[in-house]
Length: 386
Image (tube, rainbow, N blue to C red; front, side, top):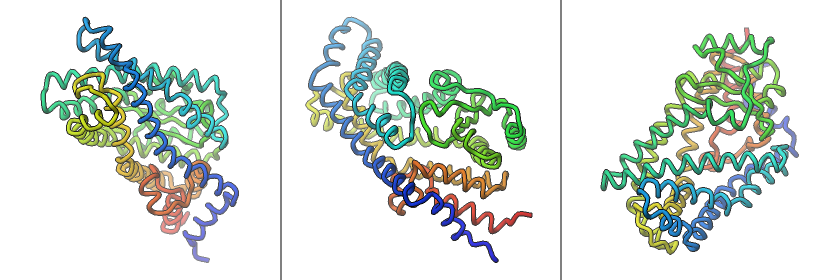
């Protein structure tokens, strides 16, 4: 009998069962609505901070200090206040909802502790970045938005470089893959692609999430491939090989650098729109801040949230293209289409596998599981096992 890719794909997806598919649909659809609710929360945070005049008082308190120092302090205070005001929403969207759907087993205390560390890091790094933006406004005049986009590119590259070395180990324990047949198989894959074997790790992703996942990150000497212990423990040898082949594809194809390029292009557009539209948004929130004043940071960050939401389809299209390339790399170089398909089906628990075309185009940063499995089955049909 001739192999039928469509029937094989349907068998993989239907194998999840009607109950699991319904649960995945509810989780995924709810996640789409979270994007809109998050924007509304950002607007509320901006309105509260502006109306209370918190940043004006902070700036006045340090009025005798240099403009750079004042911008940094105002930035830190803003990020801390925004996190505190938005804490109930963060707990609901990032912990309670995930726990109710079985996507995490993390205790609330551990979540709050890690979130606090993340907030402190984000406040310092965010304040430093916007201190640079306000300095460029003062020194480069009307073209500040071009220079700020360039600084965004440099900042993104530095952050991606340092994250695997400095930031990520704060939240998770990364260890070399343990000896055994799985390690031996992965080392062969890594060497064939020119990936150093000491750059492949297993991390305790189960601390925060029950999702079946792996990722490739970093650049240059910090580049590494990391597989969550959920995927490591819950996958067969062939599935680990297929998933690792996919992540090696991200590494070899330079997707991180392409991401930096996209961020830079979007930053140019973002800062240009802020330059033109800031007074209107500030007036809508009742703020009398000027564009070059750190006091206007809440308005600027709300604009970032709005433009980020509007740019979601573009970012997602970029992500889907990269994921498709990585899948193809795994199929070409590992040639385990069934193992890749069965591993992908495990991600359908938190990413509904059969979205409509418009839904996928707008909301999905990965191709649908059904589409990815179908590609694997078509590969299998075109390259029958020897």
